[in-house]
Length: 295
Image (cartoon, rainbow, N blue to C red; front, top):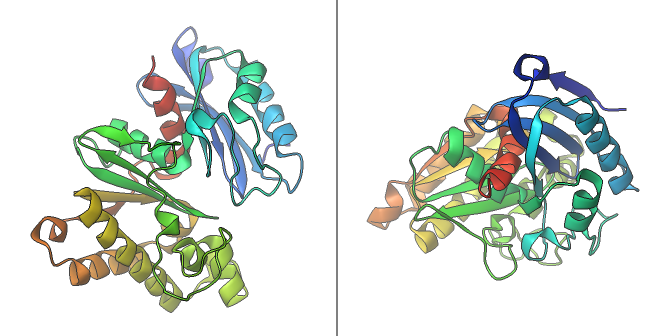
């Protein structure tokens, strides 16, 4: 059964919108988003250890059964890595999926043209659409949650890369010879600041982290952002995800402090970091933004 179901569908009968799907290592969510960026309905459940597709399809079926909105297309944000367009996905934090044919599965289940990208790529598009990055041409969006992902908009265009995995800041090395990451490398940002990593290091879930842990996580995120900001000439970083938003002010202040301390080039020095403007709706509105791009 879904953990939570919310709906504002009754007031907008006969309107059009997008089916939005967010796939993470902790939870799965399916929603309906209007063409103006309003989250109209949401259902979510915990991500199971096995049969992830079965759990996701139940959410999709339930959401589509209750909606009276004309669905134009479907957008999906999912952890990576993946092949271009989400034809095949292998999220590091979903062991059940290795080379899973996600796009064909979703299109078969929904009958909708489906657009898939890294969850942080979706998030940054949503923030540019109607969040804290409106009007910003060069921005990175980050998800700091069960894992750590990133998506970059450069000169008003999403950077996808050869296979669709561009922006994956979670695998920037921030601690040489640091902790072993699930990707197999040592010292990745994800290995030090993700929810799973923090629990492994502290022995308790990230929501119980001390201020020292929050500040250290912010410092390492800031370290990664200075490098990526210099590489891509970025103006802004918007960060979402349960860990980052749960850590709140100490985390965001530490990110900005490290960026201000380490950025010496003039064009990097002005880069700012803010929480996502869309709050916990950011993943689904971001997913809808993928579908919106083709609408």
